[in-house]
Image (tube, rainbow, N blue to C red; front, side, top):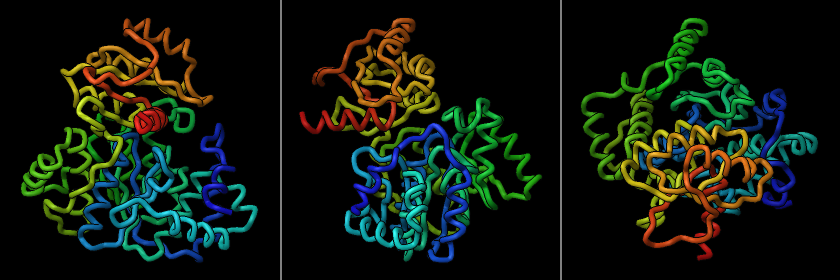
Length: 383
């Protein structure tokens, strides 16, 4: 069966997750796989861009490198970036056939979409030097947590996926940081609880957890400034670049200012054209970063949200840069009802309407989730 058809039989999202399944299956097949050096990326925001900065640098340095991220926007191939580009269909299908031969029929059927594709990435990475692997929605229970890693990078942690991770920052930070096996580097954290839990784990588990700036020299900071200028990075992306460079320093790998050419990841404050910006962010932390990057400009916000997201807080944060909201229709049962979203916008005194088309003399920000950007891109490509 073609990979595309096989994956179409698996739901993308689950109300409950069996956390014993991936460890059990991997324990059986581990000796049948060749594992490269894995750098794990956990956190709430910035995993994708941090991973792409790091993977690009490793590739340009001459290492065969994979960057595994999720979800995708338009094509599944976006999830596995290998040596400078998205994986091709033939390589994916070959890996799928190999994985089918490794797994039993029952294992193949019971693995979730994300668990299966995580193992698929591992098959693809057989001859790679490095695998930069982004966690899905969690930490210690995530499908990516079962593998041995040489390093874990911790991007900013805040509220998200509370149903699975916990309702408090302490619970969320604990769940995520428990994925650290040995060595870790913390990005700049806005929430003090992250540092508090980190300190506890250092003592209780004898972990080596460092802050990113402890691994950056004055010369690194000059290089970062030059790279950021060359790539035209917003401040929060500069912080992600800094985390990736601290990882290279930890690994004793020498980089130069050209090591990050072509590393910008689509959907992260990406300018489709002069008056259209798209971003796949979907939580308050992302909204904070976007507001700070784009103020004082005003935008028509093309938006929608899942009902489990704190959309009211997100809209409150974005309000200073929002001229009005245009609600984009998406066929997904997980979305907040249109009536509830309209009520929230009315309560916040934000003008709203339905999205119909782009007008050239308006500035647009497309934001709310990967699904919002995906739906907009389909419309944009047809226009």
